[in-house]
Structures are given as structure tokens and as C-alpha cells.
Image (cartoon, rainbow, N blue to C red):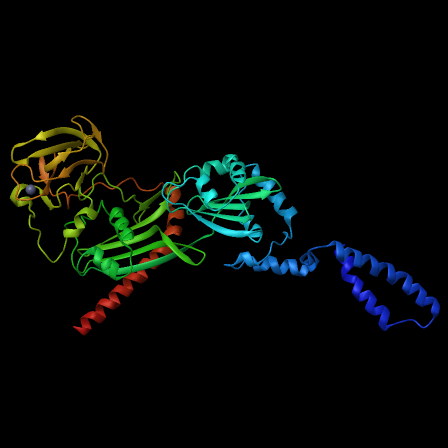
Length: 483
Ligand SMILES: [Zn+2]
């Protein structure tokens, strides 16, 4: 039909330009042209939308336009989808379940109707949201009747947004972000709807940043543009090697190689730390992310040992202590093994205290000058003691097993104490040792079968750490020359 109409004017033109000389031909031409002209006139009158006359070229142009963001879709009148059949097929396939198209059907649908972003307000449910925006409740019922749509639309929270494409009250499509990585797409097909999920286009960028500690770790990190949560996670990676509360000094250095997640050219958030280095007291600690034998990602040292050890260096969350930590200032309550065979951590009342290692609670109660105290027994004839607590954690009952990092109590100033702090002791075979320096056995190394793969994986990350260290070294040389 389209081709027919297209060729008609051309045929007419040719007949005018190159009119054959004989009368026979005139009649012949008239015989052909007249019926065609009449037929096309009839067709033109019957067809109310000249848009449909566009032909393939225009349809392509529209399809191309739909790729670019267009704030005023309203102005573009409803144009029938150039490849509705294809879309439908696509959707029918995805209905069966597992297949997740990387390009959502909606990129084609988007032109079909007006886009509206529904903002969920406090106390809203979908019904109210649809009524407020004059959208079909009947369509809503059809949509929530689909199990996939029901699953991902059941819970809506204030601040959430749901995108709909509609023609009047009729819903053409509905999209909702499930999480950062996946979205729900509901698409109208005739009188019904089809629901599918698709992957969001997330771009991962790897960034590397380094710094030297001048004041606090957090301040120095933010000076170099490292977000707080990244530096927080870095302290977690080295929690078995470095006591970030007491050991960090001015001049210590850190390098972090981590992911940034971007979407549509917009920064979303930080991803994982792929590698990090912390240099304190001239000792370098490096850790690399690697999916080991069980496929679970974990951090390993450069020689392939897990960074995890039997004991944390400091049984307090660094984040909760950092606010009053300054390496240039002495702690109000500090030290020393000499004084009372333990380590004192000044911290705010109520700061959670963690079990330094897996173990069993062998004492929980009041113990003279120690005040509220917990003693844990660990393997290898090692025990740890935590004193002056404000209160115990409910789960850390006498005789119960605790895991490393589990909160067992909260910082206080019970017993003989000059202010809120944790008094921490580490004993092996009954003898006090300095928990910050005691040699801890290394975890089992990676299975040798994985070592080559591990080495390949960390090669690039090692180069990145090295180059950042060099950069820091050249910066500090320059600083020295200036001084
Ligand atoms: Zn003490």
C-alpha cells in the first residue's frame, strides 16, 4: 500500500514529461494513469494520518530520535511503533522466564505515549498514585496481576519513583528500578501486559588514589578525594595487620585502587576496593581482591595468603574512635604494657567492643578494678580480656561461643577507671603479650592450583599500587625541597 502511493506521483510526472507521440500510446497511458490516480485519491481520503505515509526512512528517523533524551515527548504525537511485531515477539520470549534482554523493550516503547515519573510520597500506595495521576486503575490491576510485576511493585517507599508511559489514562509501559543493577519493565501488548526484567547499563571505572597522613587518616584521605566509606573499608582490609586506632602516624601512606559505578554518564557510587596498600612505621601491607577456590571474593596478600588472621589488632570499630583520634596528640588515657599489661583505647561511652577472635566466653561479670569484664578463651591457649565496660551485649553470655568481630559489650568506665575507655589484654599460656605486635600465625595460603591465576589477576593492580607509591615519593621529595 505504501509503495503504491509513493510511486503514483512519480508515474504521473513521467507521463507528462515523456509523452509518446502516437495517439495509441496516449490512450494506453491514460488507461493506466487514470485508474491509478483515482485509486490513490481514494486511498488518501481514507487514510486520516499522513504520518503513516512516512515510509521506512521516516520510521528510522523516529527510532533514532528515541535514543536521545527528549523532555517533551508530549509534543510528539502518538506514532505507531515501526516494529511492533518484533517487540512483541521479543517480549513473548522473555515472558517464559530466564532471558533478560540487555536492551529493554522500552527503548522502542518510549515513543509511544507521554512519559510520566510517579514520585512516591509518604503513605502512598500504587492505587493512590495512579488515581492522583489520572491513570487507569483497571490497567494497574492487570499489571499487578502479573507475578513478576507484583513481586517488584509490592513494596513502594516514599522517595521511590516509577516511570510510566501513557496515552491519556491508558498505560503503555511502566518501568521501575529494582536495584542498581536491574529494572522491571511492564509493556502493553494489545489489551494485556507483559512483565520482564532487564539489566541496567552500569559502567565500572577503576580509579586509584593515594595519600600521606598529615592529621587524621580520614582527613588525609578526604584531602586526596577518597570517600569516607572507601577508607573505612580499607581499614577493614588491614584490621588484622594494623591497629588503626593507636598505630597510625604522621607520614604513613595509603594507596587505594577501587571501582566507581557510573550510569548514563552519571556517578552513582563506589564499588569494591580491588587493591590497597597501607604503609605504617616503614612496613608495607598490601591486599588484593580475589575470588578464591570457592568463588567467594576475599582479600589476599601479594604472596597469596588470606589477610584474615585469628585476631584483630584492635577490638574496637575504628570508625567509632576516629573522631577523637589525632596522631599528633597523645591519648588522654594511653598505654602501656608496663603500666598494667594491657592496651587502653580511649573511646566514647557506648562504642561497641568486638571479640578479637573466635572463642568462648569464660567469664562475664564484675572483676574488681576491671569493672564489667569479659574474658574469651581461644584456641592455642590464648585468652583475651575486655574491661571497664558500660554493659555487656545480650548475645555474649557466659559459656557462649562468639565469632571474630562480634560485638560483646560497650565502652564504659566501670571499675577503677579515669574515663571511658576499653582496657584490653592478650595472654598466651597465661603470659601477657602486646596484642598490637604479637606475631599472629598466617592463614593458609591459596591452593597452589590457583596461584598462577592469582598472580595474573594482581599483576595490573600491583603496577597501579607501585605507580601511586612512586607518585607519593616524588611528591614528598618536592615537599622536602620546599621546606
Ligand atoms: Zn587499662
